[in-house]
Length: 103
Length: 234
Image (cartoon, rainbow over all chains, first blue to last red):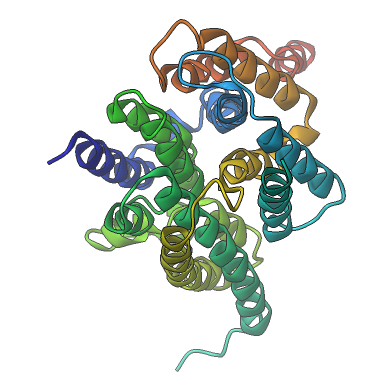
């Protein structure tokens, strides 16, 4: 088994076990307001970190591809205009692809 | 024979709408996953077994960032922690017993929870959970597979796929940014991750961002203070 497969199986089974734990654990553990707040904030902190890393991490050093950045900026405009997910996705890749083609 | 459920049509329509959205989302996942270097089989195991979108994207992003793929395990699991919390309202709605719990748990995600808890009657809640879960699961797989096949046929950077992952993460993050405290958490998460880029192996900056959620969640909040005041004044 390659390291990637190993990581994939652990993460996939672990994700399922988290769902199962929620249906099996006594409610009192999960009902604590502070615990719930941490759980609410977790995806926010990590998704935001992922955006930053995808844009500015060039493998251990800072690196920006301005065409990717422009694509994501266009996606922000689509989000501000309350466009759906598919539009946001297509705008991002279309702008980046066109800029790459033109430069 | 049970009476037909009056809300059935409305729920089904909403579930199909969510399913179609999931299909598009799944297609983008398939394309990004294969474009980042995962195989078709790996992409589909993620969609079938992990079956929780944000964690799947995070897994692909971190596993292919150039460090150890094992760094993707905590990154995707930390993003999946919220699913555990959905078990609390859903257990009350579904009362899964014994083995039923094993397959019911697989469908515990953002969309099924939101659909179930927003219905008015216990029967409608159960129906909404299963209708959304089964439709979404099917279309998610179909979307992932289509996206992966398209992703395999093209050169990812030619079609701008490298902009897709950050755009998807941003789209997932967007609705929660309406809250002020959430905006601070988002800013903090990005700052911690960026600061660590030159210092740690790839993957670690994303995991470290979880500490921001921990600090922000555990610090005494205004709501806590109000609760104490209520208790003191009553």
